[in-house]
Length: 397
Image (cartoon, rainbow, N blue to C red):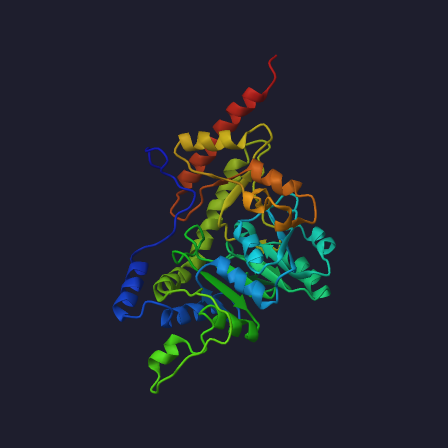
């Protein structure tokens, strides 16, 4: 670790000359918008996750919007989800003029509590939007079972989960199969795979995929790639409202190189997470993340729950003073000003575990370029910080 202050970030993308050469190839081709590189990236991503279709878009928020629209979410509808997520999860619901209905997260984790989903269903429920938070798969089997029982589509916010796996009917399968109706991914720089920004929709439904491809390009009846190669003049039409949600070939070229190394990236991240858990076990009361027996995380982030006597802000500041960046636990959407008005959402349950998680958890640095020594040193720093805080919290004799 560098002796210079504030040199260890929370996340860092893995980029090298392979991505540089991929972008150079596209720039020199003269075709830099959505084109052959996007198509190739889609095929390769679909093969990687085991999906029939993968459709690239500009980011995961637009992916969520198209997914919700595709299953029929509209004005006056409700979508069951969690408040304990990045605000885009609920924003995409509101883009459809529908109402986010929040349920609490599970005890001891950061994902939707499936025990709370069924009671949140009403006659207006149009979809269930679950989140694989921080790359840790949620209890998808139970959520999908509820969706099937009530004929409600299940959409996976898999923004963080590229490379994560779930045990499904006795077989390990990658998130994005998809196991619900549609899975949505992000390629933001904080994610394990990045294209600078970008998103992907994975589905087994032919009609959904057709709609995604129509809507992402202003609902243009004839894609510009087809017009470009046509031997006769073609006039396109615009049969319905669409959006400018395209990925560029520049981004897709980077994504193709990133995808080639994804399995290796996940393997190293899993090693780092295991070392964190071993090193941090010495801090009494600290809650380290754990995989259910049916899940394999890509460890997009490593989030710890602090003991009650260790203040979140103070701990983060002490780490920062020692050159270690961190982030507070996942936000709660219902606590943000944009969701302050009662008509912006409905809480179907108390959200106590969600709020506590935000206030008492900290995301520690985790990225492939870290060394084992970095992890050990971060753990030592946190152990020292915890010891000082605990001593200060003890009553005087």
